[in-house]
Amino acid sequence: MKNMARERARITLQISAALVHRLQEAADLRGMTLKHFLVETALTEANRLARRSAATRDAPQDAAVLSEPADDPH
Image (cartoon, rainbow, N blue to C red; front, side):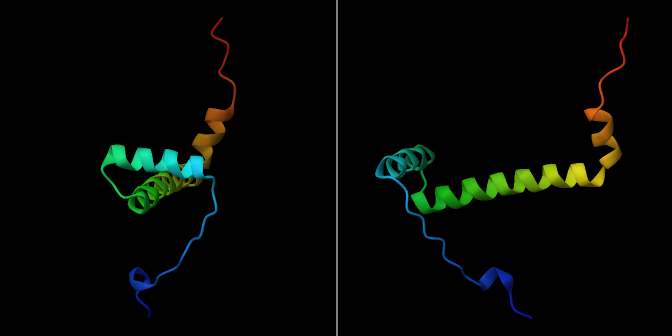
């Protein structure tokens, strides 16, 4: 079995120079390289979304209750 951590893939982006500048500024504020900033930020968001999705998937009855209108207290 291949070790997934050792496999590599490349992502190529073409974005505006203004966006590169903005992202570089944010990376600088964090004391990170642009590459590290992009990976860490994207991974943090991906993990957040995965946890949120898992919570909804694991408790569909809870999601249904939360989507129903509350009883009128009057």
